[in-house]
Image (cartoon, rainbow, N blue to C red; front, side, top):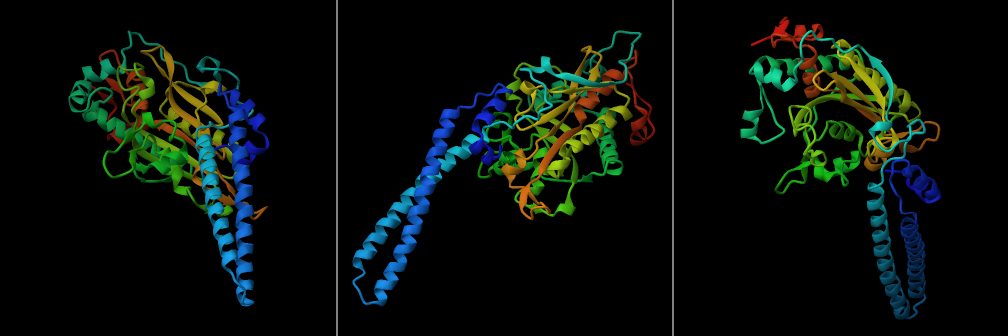
Length: 425
């Protein structure tokens, strides 16, 4: 969440910055709530001090043998008044907290203005799209013609936006995930984590999916307040919730390969064909927990780690800096990596790398002890796909296809495929 001290001291500046996102911050309503909170905070403090003083007077009067009944009546009235003031204060604080949880993060100054993806800025491009001597097919046609992608069977089992992957393609997807894990742990210094796929609502509030994006989540029915993870970001980032980290413990760098589950409620009608947008998919997720002064250097490094995956796979891609209106709810700055898909004749997102600054940390109470002040302060959190496994598989099928319908196995994956160089019928 946004720093409450900043909201109180400079609400006009917060409103101005949020307007860059197209978010209209109701300053009058916020200030009214804050006024209520301050009033009841002052009243609670006053009544608590008065009650404590009254208790001392009762003790003194009792010691002198005086009638304490009038003092006890006064104390009961103060206690009742204090209870009411505390209820009013808690109600005002609850309203402010719910409001704060619905506010998006403030943007970094380097984020370009703009209302939608048309204003995103390309900052880098790597590799040239392959020139085919035949009409390239999309991943659905390729996979189905090989008998290795089965959307019809998945529909019988689960419905739309699922797929069954068979035999050599299932092994290729596994090889992709293993390759990414090995790269990030052996070369980029990440610690591999196996973490829960089911998380509490508190964990999702911590990383910002709740309360705003509940419609995009899969919740369990029954007695458990649990959700399927939309991304391993939730499990990995919450490893530091309610912790005060020693300065020498930072940075922390975590990587996990997990399934991800999203209802795609906000994407109805988009990418309904194939594997681009599924309810269940796999990702290798990167998370960093760092000192605040190091977070933007960490963002550039994390972006580079995701790019290395695409470079080793020899997939053409570009890097895009998202504009204000396209930057995610909790992010202060985001780069998207977009891989080339020949069938669509355009680049499509395969990774987002974001710096959340202290936004998630405040929601999770994740802190470090600053050696300069000796006080606990929020850490900065970052995450990025390193990369989305299903979309990487789509990119391989389309960029490495042959005219006879077979698929070349990239050299970086051949050791994970038992030396196999081609996937055919």
